[in-house]
Length: 133
Image (cartoon, rainbow, N blue to C red; front, side, top):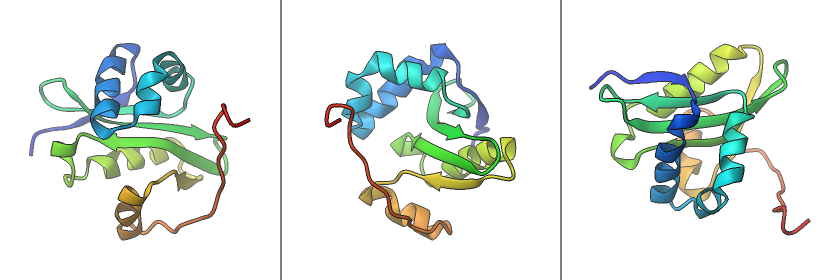
């Protein structure tokens, strides 16, 4: 397996992240590009996984209060790079920055089994889009 570097998000990573979002069908993030970039620039932690050849192959965007909760808003690894522990490394790196926090994640039905298999418990929540408000 090639060496994967986990590092902080930089603005010049944005096009690669939007490409990953598009491939995954996360059209809302793609269509709202300016807001998506703003969210990455203002999130902590915001991390990318980079292959040996410099390709961004995954990312994590989180929010935290630094004391109780680290909330993972987006976590995505390029389809051909999955099952290599990259998502786990992104989560671990984010948590190392805030080791006393619990980790909560957004998930969809496709990712539910991944999180369950890695020891995460489901919790209940609600959502309204900005348009619905």
